Length: 165
Image 1 (tube, one colour):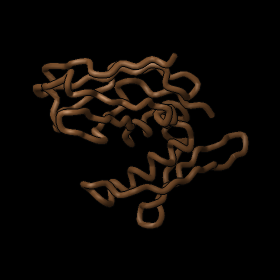
Image 2 (spheres, rainbow, N blue to C red):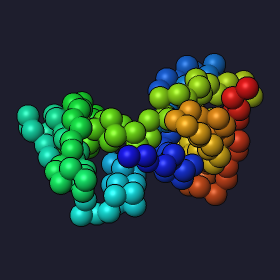
Image 3 (spheres, rainbow, N blue to C red):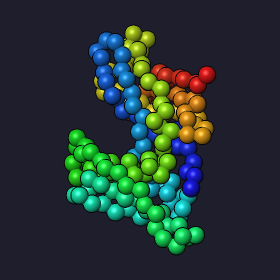
Image 4 (cartoon, rainbow, N blue to C red):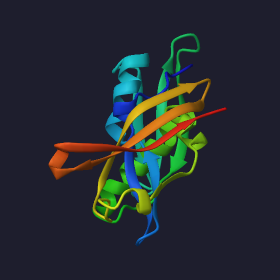
């Protein structure tokens, strides 16, 4: 089973580290809705299921194999989020199980995304970011572009561009 690569608008960006006056490191991630949409698109909404155990710490994502006439599952464990512990735990274990199926696995090949504040004085620790360009082939990120979003989405500035050599 092969899942397509993520699209730029399916990738979220969060601040991993902010060094005042120096730089900000950014981290790419996908949310659970992205995984659900890709599962629906690829195998059909009735041909996959998720089951949680250990108080939502573990999740098994199973896909119906019509040749074997059985469910085939992959399992992983999540961690609690900082905001909604139980919901975050269930969501994280689900997303990790989907990584096991290959959904979004290319995110593990991301380069370090470092934005230098010297060149971007308008950026602060509350700045939001978005991926505006993303190319992945055979599970490897080939190109990526990230921009900062200001004034409640009215203004944007490209802050990171990268291409695999």
